Amino acid sequence: MMKAGQEMKMMPGAVAACFLPVGLGLLFTVFLLSSGPAADQFMTLPISLCFVFGTPLSAWLACRRLRKIEDANRLARWGTSFWAGLLWSSIVHFAAAFIYTIGFMFWAARDAAINEVPIGEDLFSIFFMSGFINLMLWGVLTLPFALISASVFWRVSKFPKDVSVF
Image (cartoon, rainbow, N blue to C red; front, side):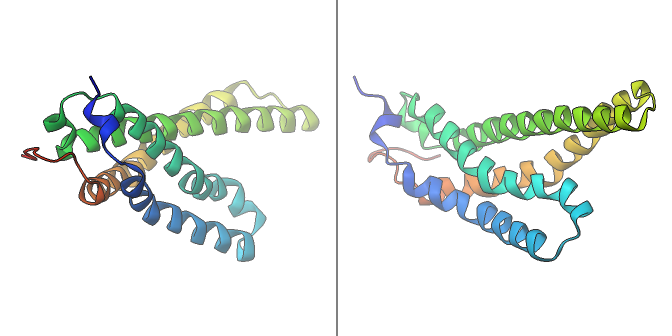
């Protein structure tokens, strides 16, 4: 028996869902690289690149999750698309944040070793502030874009015939 998620063509919906965040990420990246001071790029460039690369990754992972759904009625619901998108966009967001934080900690430790200053308390501050900033970014960027993208995906996707959407 074929699963309902395997019958559905998700690519048009995934591409449409990625259009706004990837477009904004590309615009912001071009703006940063063309006119932004190098100091600003260190903090903001990873965010814009997460829009460019993280959004398609999140969409692909969410579609993989949706492909495993057997019930066509459950698959056709907006909430199913939203929760799959939110789950994977959150995982990608926090994975990228973790990688960036670890990289920043290594950079700060290297800088402290070069300048011969202790780094112990600074590492905790970096980790704490990164967690705080990334929770804020998740609430301000990832959550709303997951909501918008899931709505676009749900609207564009062609669900299997004879399915009650509500």
